[in-house]
Length: 407
Image (tube, rainbow, N blue to C red):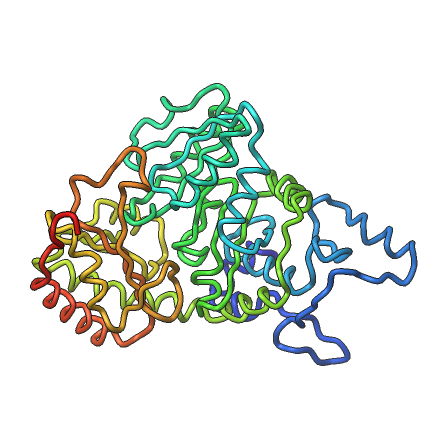
């Protein structure tokens, strides 16, 4: 059965449960792929080794040496490829490593890169440290840019975007961006798809060339493993594979097994996160201490129409903007929370809260016209308990006085 046939005959949940399963041997099989830990692969003969190293395609999966992957990793790659509706997937030890593999693997000295201003903040450090010194130029564009074509240069080779954008959650018109990029020539469109994780949005279906997901988040789902993936089209996969092999980027079979185990229940967990997040977002939208809730599923979101048209669901991640003029309140509010932990990641079973500043993470927007921002990752706790936690913390924060000048 082809991927297109599966798309029309069985649902995503069925594909997540039954995909990438090992074959029957002697009439039986484990329900999960075995964990194959291997650096060295021993061949019965030199002829067998030579045959394995000539798979017919430079980007094909080949169990010849640990850095090229193991059967456990290949199973996870297949599952993600099916989820993202791509041609092939490569795995990385973190989401940021996946991003680095794309930027370093596809851009060359003299190239120009366009990056959405709402990009995941560590990408900026990666650009400044490793691309700038290699003679790769880059500019940031607003997520609300209405004429992206005017920003393209003769040397532009990539548009790097993220939808929704970090913290402020703006959605991007990936199909429109791809149309502009591909009309301009050999310009790749790369999309960080971690929020949707391939479950409710698939950038390659909208014209993107590469889709990046931090499997650390929803694919793993249990806050105990780091993983990144890049899913590519047929036109870009071999170059992605070559860059990954040459850079020596490899993942642990044990980590792959953990992400595979988490991905089996993605279709149960992901909507549960969204259901709880929407309840909390609706409640926060009515609070007088909250100036705005940034979450595309809300009807009053400026991106709600695009979300309804292009997404099949929503993540449990959004941000709130506290009433302006009280910058001290963000940290004070988060410190008052009891069920929400304080941590830098998201997408796990537990709820997390984190104050966010745009001042050091944006080039085109400083956040000066916004109130303090707090990012909320809604976990799988009972939503009434989470609302009670938020309500109590907001009430307690009212009494918090600002720090004395100079303290």
